Amino acid sequence: MLKKNILSLLTIIIALSLIGCGRRPPLPPPTEVAVATVMPQRAVLTTELPGRTSAYRIAEIRPQVNGLIQKRLFTEGSDVNAGQILYQIDPAPFQATVNNAKASLNRAKALLPSIRSRVERYKELLTDNAVSQQEYDDATSSLNQTEAEIQYWQATVETANINLGYTSVTAPISGRIGKSSVTDGALVTAYQPTPLATIQQLNPIYVDVPQSTTEMLRLNRRLKDGSFNQNEPNQKNVKLFLEEGVAYPLDGKLQFRDITVDPTTGTVILRIVFPNPQEILLPGMFTRVIIEEGVQEQAILIPQQTVSRDLKGNPVVMIVDAENKVQPRPLALERAIGDQWLVSSGLSFGDRVIAEGLQKVRPGSVVKAIPFDAAGKNAKPGAQSRTNGGK
Image (tube, rainbow, N blue to C red; front, top):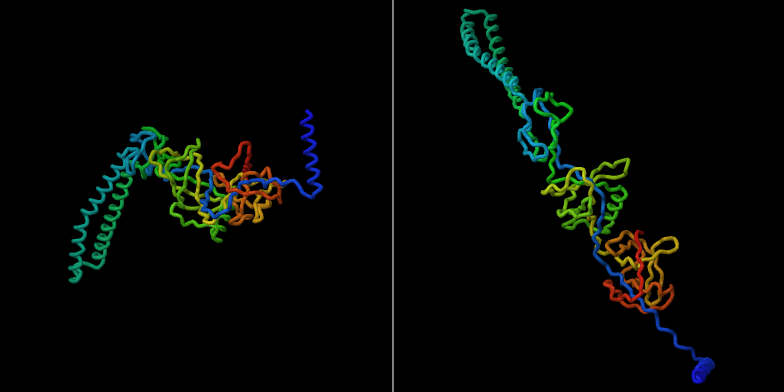
């Protein structure tokens, strides 16, 4: 015990003697922080939007003549081919109309040679005054009338054949046919409002995506000022996620952007075409799509853990200046890309942003900067990192 007291006394005496001589205790070494140096990076900018599927082509099957359905010739819910007969309407009355028109046409044709010969004879006799001009005119008029009747009955035969053909109701497109609204024996009318059935082509299939006009204008402005380009070979490739969150295996192609703005939602429709060979996508399904807007070649990306918030909620980072002093720097963030923030303003290439050790430093303090390892090799036990979501 006495020995410890003596040692403490000696320590105090030595300290007092040093102070009396004007010497101070050595300063602690600078705090070590890990910094990420801002370098230009290539950033692919994407947008995730909700969408809804719709059939590539839709055909509502309606009869073109009145009649009685004799037979339905397809299975509901099956795939049908263009030109395939779907319904057979009783053709008997239409066949009778064709036969009647043909008979009338043949009768008119049978009269034509005799009338034509009479006109030719009257023409010769007219020069010898053997027949009157009136008789010749009457014969010519009869010839013209007979020729007109032949043309009329030819058109009637053609119309009757068309109507007879309409008794076989065929598929105008290939696709999946739904349920039938009529059964055998049903009476149908031409161009009735209720379709007999509906065919939808599912491969390929459309996905309609609403995009806000605000986002569209922002994108157009950035294209004009050269912030990024849209000349990438995979620019129009679009990824799709199903309702359950599973990624669809095939990429789609952005086909066009509508030019009409929906006044109720302030959006325009982007139409995307996806191949659908397995018919996984069905009309009316909700989906999520990821659209590539463009590529920013000289982007500033920083780890999300480097960004904190001030009292007003504005994003801010701590940088290490040329004198190894800590300085705050307010930012303008555009979006998150993976585990990084895309910075639109506030940083320059070459700036050193503190990624680890933020809790141990204050603005103006001198620090020792070491390179930040994104894989976590700099991390020390008990160290904490900041992660901020949203702007």
